[in-house]
Length: 112
Image: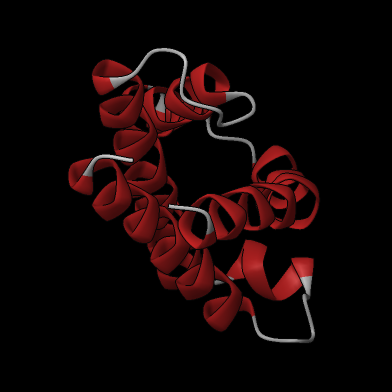
């Protein structure tokens, strides 16, 4: 695996870990929804994840990140559709999709 791809995978993992640190073990949707700073911080981490995924697929379009295109699309939605970002959708992504992505990235980094 190219060193550059490893760096982007590390960036994805770091951003996922940051999101998990921000929300803590409680995972309280109301706390998320009512805390503008928390929401913006998480949105920024999702932007980083999407940008890193986009850079990876530009280097290797067949790189095995499940739903890489959707990850990039999420980044674009958060950035360009900032006024239409749905807290429920973002929360669902945090709870359901990020753990899957984190596992994929960790396996890829271990098998470099």
